[in-house]
Image (cartoon, rainbow, N blue to C red; front, side):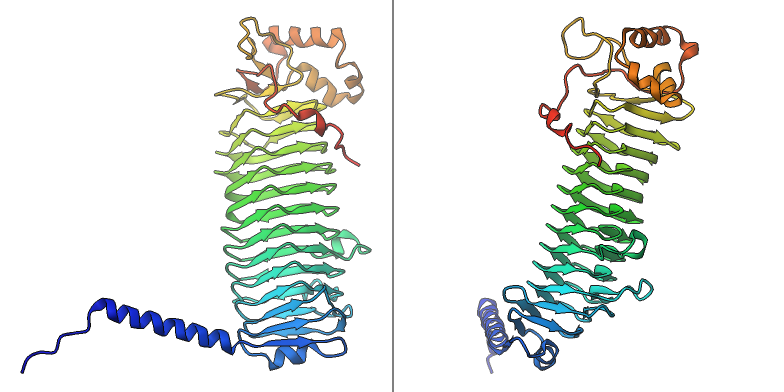
Length: 430
């Protein structure tokens, strides 16, 4: 008997594709939409819904505590309000692939030990998306724990404003997460705006954070991107602590009462093209090694960069230090070279450019005798622009016995890299 010819491979593939399409169509057709009107219970609709369904909530006020234990979409129509009545969590998510969109979520409890939150996402609830919602008067706005690939986008988060800072939770809390996307949120009056602990491979883009302790507080988190965010009128703008492989670029940190950007125990990171303006300390750099700081505008701070505790082997180049009361406060036992390739711009540089190449002919030293005198006697700053002080600086450069360890820039630029620097002078601390 002749052997039967097998079905051609391309025909088998076609049949399988058709089957997959039919299954997808059946799944789509099976998904239902449940509508909740004012006076009805959202929790009852969630209970009736199946995985993949959508629960739509019309505009109204709903005093409920919601638990979402299946993959579904909870979507508000014209921003309905869900209130937790100042107790517990308002919404608790216990399933993967949940979407919460377009709600006002408010009035969680205030138990820090229980971590009460507007939206609490439990461990294992991967790929949750929280979008376009308003979270107000919650202890923690959003709590994310041990989850992968979550998305928090376009939300307005305001904490318990009448509580002391230490008694508030954080706007967005990430603990032991991977691959989070935190984009386009506005956060205020929480303890810290975004707290990131043991969380990796995340992107924080386009967020605005104000009137909190730290705009963002990173701990033990690696391979993250912090880009195009604005942190202002806080105690600190951005605190990066015990981290590696961070990209921090195109951000603005201004008007903060302590620091704009803190780099503490950080390695192998890039901090570039940021504006740090009108803070007490622009950069606070402590125990930082093997990092790149390039293209930053450091302007109008009381101290442009406070550098100490073994912060060495960093590439600091093409930055502008403009009209900081003290350009650099440097505490160490030896000089550190900055501007090795192109040089930085220093608005208090007193050298000259005889050959017209836009690079100073004498090196810039940050910690000279005049700087030390102004640290010790702050009233001496009133004389900083006097001929006597300029003469004292030149004398100190001529007598090495008078100098202390310093940041030294061998290629100080004569013209700032940022042509629009002057518009940042008005953003001062309040």
